[in-house]
Image (cartoon, rainbow, N blue to C red; front, side, top):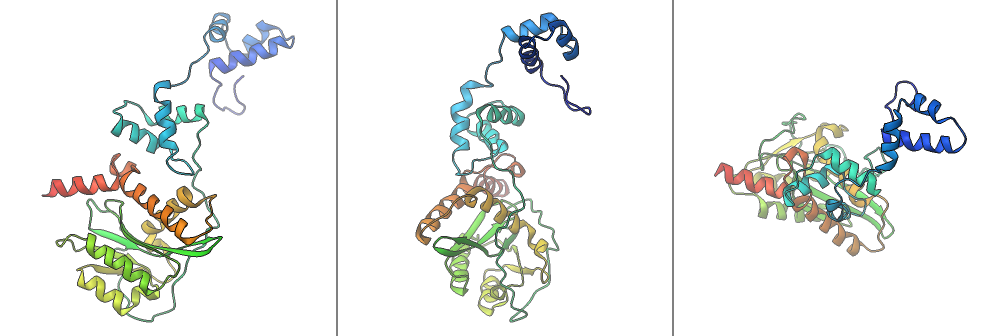
Length: 303
């Protein structure tokens, strides 16, 4: 009853069920028990004591947490929520087992055919040194940040998201959702950033070599806020990999399998998801905190 080529053995309960089924087809029970490596007493005990569901008292909460996003959430996020909010003492593996028993499965991240927006038009303004050099690690908020533009192709047409992502807190601290990837979108995003940024902060912001990030107005806006601009090399998206990773999560958790007939409906739903990302979505790298909780705690500790 073991799996071939040295694979993992079946649990005793499953072995016992397989033996019972084959025995019912006329095969000798003693031979089956010998092949399965089961003692007769173990066989009868397993049949008489069917295994109950794992942590049934937590199942309603698991279902509620999983259902917060259209494509579900992973077992680690469910586990972190149960521990942080419900005070449950439960391991990640136990939550994974529960979700499998309940038939709850979050889509695994994979390579997709999502469209990548490319705003490079050559050197059309001011370019900058790649200050960060792919060092995206930050031990607190408002130290290192990144921005980029990603494209969504939907029934109503195209839409564009321009966020500012804090590498330390994992928070989307500013954003603009627009039907056009133009300078007006950047103005809206920069205005939100200026309102959110603490006066004492002088972060480094990673951008690619898109035309908008070379534009004199964008450059002046960052300089006026005391933000140091760091620019990826031409055609090298890995240089801004932290922000690209956020786009991957958004399109897996929010977009995949969905469509919208109007820009207004899409924008409202994406705004709600960004709020979920910042205020609800717990992250392992933040030790189970949400981005907002991490930022607030880090600033309190530094005060």
